[in-house]
Length: 617
Image (cartoon, rainbow, N blue to C red):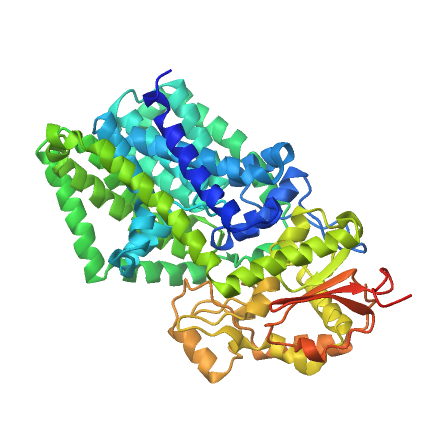
């Protein structure tokens, strides 16, 4: 086999190797810590779910007295490969899958571009699209909101989206281009279509609805008035897709059926009743009637019609991307009309931007296709591709050195290693319990099979909300904190930015249970401070990322805390962040614990009744 046949594999090996070699060089730490800190944004929040799925246990409570919980709903298709390989390769699975994801995505980009260009040009364009998020991030282009959204959604190493979910999306795009330009009907095509539909629904349902609408529009345009007779005539192919869609999506649908309702409420999922449907439909119709959108939509439509009337040889290729853009516009309207529930509707908006920009990029390539194929220019495409690879590798080095030179970040990472190492020295992880408000330590504990956690992030457990509340009350009692500390913990304005309220303390445990926007508030309450209510009313109805607790709920939580008198389970270890705003570590009264480590960022205690303290006989 020649080098050319494996060029994408070699490029992927190089990119992933450089990324992780730099990480291992800059930060000497165990692989379990490394994957947490090298995670992109909040992708690490899915690591516990991967661990659960690898053990086929989706209802862990991490509490010796709580069993028989309902299960956690998870994006099954985008985590299953991680989960299966985790049992074989341990934490190195995350590196292996990054390599596989890059290889597959580059191959998909390459094969899509091959419908238009030669191998050299297709390789360059594939790398350009792959590297485009980095180019945008490091240039003035990042100041343009649409390009910023494009850069963060086209590809990153965030688990599982977009790293895995976009593989299914671009597999669909490649497949329908192939079906449209070559042979439409074949068992293989329709089996793959059903599988991709199932995987998309099971990983990122926004993509599934986009794909379904796109395929529906494609066959309507392809067969026009004969579509019904065509479907009946070729029913076996459509049946194959439906059959394999059902097979592929069944694990996810079963998982969803038996899930814990409190868990999905914490994820911001809400019932789409008729009033909400009307509000959201009006919102989207208003957006679509804005002059800027009408100009863009009209321009794209006129260009597509013109290309088709002129019978450009690449019109069928361009039509696929117009269908994707058109489908992204229809997508939220269709979803709101048919779905009984919803969450994070801004993803639909992002898809309009992404498909629109991809359409414009494809149009540009078609217009300037002859210039790309210039014999003189073709000779330089290998050099251009190499420069893109070097630029991407340099970004890894730049990012790593920037982290290393950030004293706060570097200290935090070092102390994380010191604390976890100290815990391992004291006792076997399977025998201990930990109390911490820090999500990263919870993730580390779950990945390392720590059996009990006195507190757990609301996205890592199917505990009901009242159970998590009791865990919080218990943690305050263990730390001997008082009512004033708890009131600070609950303050809505703990983390007020220019575009939303979000109490970081509450969000760790209840996330978007208290979402507040112009359409939805907790229990439809208007019991907020005047400035809060004013901010809510001015906000968009799809601002699901904002969380504000109504005043009556704050009072309820205070009363529940004051009246809490249930049994308290004393943990083996306590890990606290010195910068937490609801207590002062210097004023803590922890007579049942002795200090193990006192750093700039973190402080670690162990249970003196379970472990011998250094100064004790």
